[in-house]
Each structure stands twice: as structure tokens, then as C-alpha cells.
Length: 393
Image (tube, rainbow, N blue to C red; front, side, top):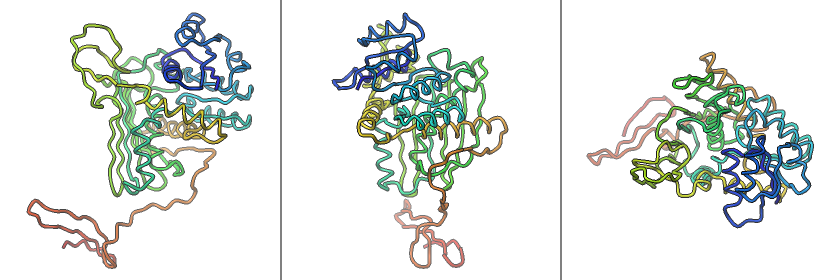
């Protein structure tokens, strides 16, 4: 498949590294950039035969089969509309839009044009995430009741991220979009997000947007998705997920402490890992960054879906729902109240029952807790189904 990459910055280079690093049939044969010099340099670095500073030319080129959008958030809508006009399959980096309104416009444009539209949410393709999701879907931890996703680091690499108008916000729109979609997958994408409670503040940087936030997303089945994001965390990039189920728990550490540690006095200037603040002292390199961050699995899923005319794991609709949740988070941060998630086009389950009943112990009791004490005694705590009384055995 011949691919056009829109953008020449940090994420565009990550995508190019993924696509050219291994022997594969997909080829980057066009790149668009706003700076002619940077665009030429990108083309030279990745042996891309065609490059241009004309957006529509990079999309409509006859040798382009699919388009990857790796542009600042404020340019996503324009690029998607151009792809729709040219009838080209489009893959857009996260977040889909700066807000729900933009995301919905992109979704509707892609569907009206009848083109493939994939949402490039890489952290929903990491090996640990895919294994966790498979275990959850197979019932390993029972019904999911609470998830927690954390992404924190010292701050973004490009200037536009720090511009509230261009980015659409701060740490929530940048990092929270990952966390929200991770939780949606674990809880179930067909379960409607109902409301959000969020705290956000600018604690460290001289910017208009938030650089720290914590939020709770309540779902219709009673599950809670929690996100924690920060642009003030020192020491690298911290990516962690937790899932609590009725029958088990999952903890994953995706990046900062993965079992690869190295000490250096600082001699040499080699790259260590994304968002690493230093090349001296104890360092935490990542063996294969694009693989550990999910890029390989993500593009394989996307291109397989295009070729087989099916939906990828992450779609523009998912991107729209994420933006709708983030809109509610920003509103809650302003009002300090639970705020509803406004979804104009809900396509999931419409009738969901909240589960509060416990596990049945026998015909007369629910099981609350069963435990072996240090003395070796077995303690069982029960609830009488008829009277509601709490009893022990």
C-alpha cells in the first residue's frame, strides 16, 4: 500500500520509523509538510520519493492509496475533509478533534464519502494492552468495575501543544484521550459514558491550558474509568494501567519501569527513550519503542482492515466518543460538578442494568468475603438473602 504522511514532526517520524523499520509491503511514497526544508529532510531521511508543501496535492496524488494525518490538532479537520473530497482512506492521529463538534464533523464527512477512517490510538495496541483486553474479554477477571489509566511526563515536544487554541486544551486533550480510550476498551465500548467529574489546574507552566488533571468517567453499567494526566512529572514518561474486576485485577507498567535499567555517567549523547530528561544516572531505555507503544500492531490492524474492507479496532467513531468525554471533563473542571457526556450519535447498547448483587453462596446467602487468617482459621462472611443480615461462619 502506498502511503502519504501529512506532517514531518515527532509523531510523523514515529510513524515513518514503524513503516520503514521492517520488511513489509506498505511504502511511504509521499510526505507533506508546511516547511519546505523540513519536508525535504524528512523525505531524504526515510527515502520518500515524493514530497510537497501543498496539502491537497499530497492527498490526491495518483500513487497514494491511503493518508496518515500526523499534524497539529487544529489541522485535523481540514485534512480529513480533503481526504473525503479525494475519496482516500484516512488514518488520523489522536485526538481526532479539538472537541466533539470537530470530531463529529470528521466522522460524518468520512462516512458520507464512504471512505475508510481509522483512529490512530497507539496505546490501545500495545502488547500488554492487547493481552490484558483479551484476558478481560475471556472473563479472566470477571465484570470490570473500575479502571485507572495514568500518563504523565515533563511536557510535550512541540510548541503548538502548549497553545490552547491550536491544541484544544492541555494535558487532558493530549494525554487524557489515551487514558479515556483505554478505559472504554476495558469497560466495553458498547457501554455508554454518562457523566464526568474532573479536577484540572495549571500547576507549573506559564500557559493558559491545564498541565495536570484527574477525572472520573461514570458509565451506564456503574463502572468507573479514572484518568490521571500530567505535564509536570519529572523523570521520563510514566504509562500505567489498572483494571479491577469482580474476579481479578490487572496492573501494567508500559514504559517507565519495564525491566530495562542502565546507569551512565553521561558520556555520549545517544537517545534514551521518549520524554527522557537526562542521559546520565539511572536510565530506563525501551528496547523497541515503536513496538512497545503499539505502532506495529496499530498499522497492521489498519492496513489489514483497509484491504479486507472491515472496521479496525479503533475508528473515527471511537475518536468522536473520546472527544465527547473530554468535552464533559473540561466542563466539569470549570463547574466543579459532575457534567453529562453529550453524545449526538450513540451507537452502543441502550439498555444496561447496573450490577450490585453479590455472588451466591447457597440458596440462603450471598458470599461477601472468604479468607484464610494467619491462625489458619477459615473465615466466611455472608449476607442473608431474606433478612439482609451480615453473618459469619
